[in-house]
Length: 161
Ligand SMILES: [Zn+2]
Image 1: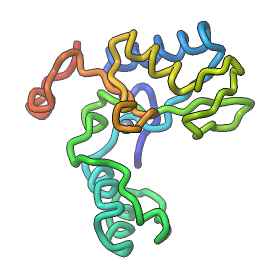
Image 2: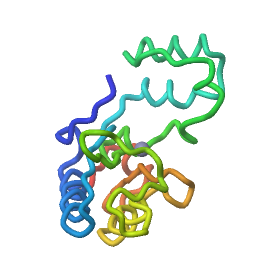
Image 3: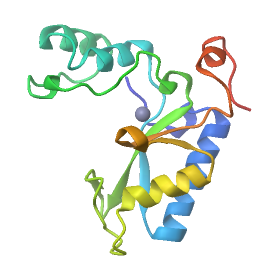
């Protein structure tokens, strides 16, 4: 089952998340929570299949990965570009902004009313903290921190320290 637990992140990655969370709150009055942290290979395979394989096959993979089935409509678009996500190594998290107990998914939202989109503010802060974001390719909710390690080094078992 996909995890949203912070304890499933590598310790330096968890520390970065907490710095981002506190900074977003202190500086912008924005509350963020992690919605996805560590992922298993089978979960990534199911996500990668989405929008690329038949709905039947996607839901077959999702069933093995203990993810809820998706609709034909959701299978019309892809949700990841890689089988090798940094989520597999506990080096990435997805997050969302929370307001009054509700998740805000609109990347143009301005819940703190300062005329700047909230997700831009969180991404600015993340990048200031040395966290890579997916903003450049439209994935505002994805953050990763590898401590300078490459994907190959992570695959070989190295982890950020
Ligand atoms: Zn992600």
